[in-house]
Length: 30
Image 1 (cartoon, rainbow, N blue to C red):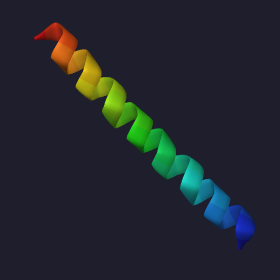
Image 2: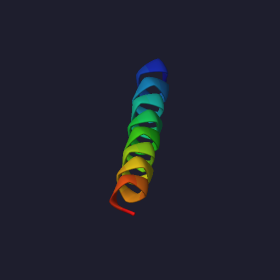
Image 3: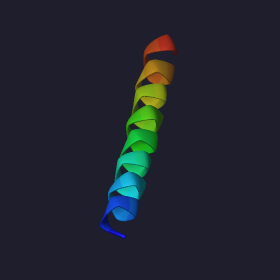
């Protein structure tokens, strides 16, 4: 159960980091 929650947390934070990086890259390219 704890392992599952940890995996979910890591996955969501990775998605968040990717979204931020894409947003920053988009702003830089524009």
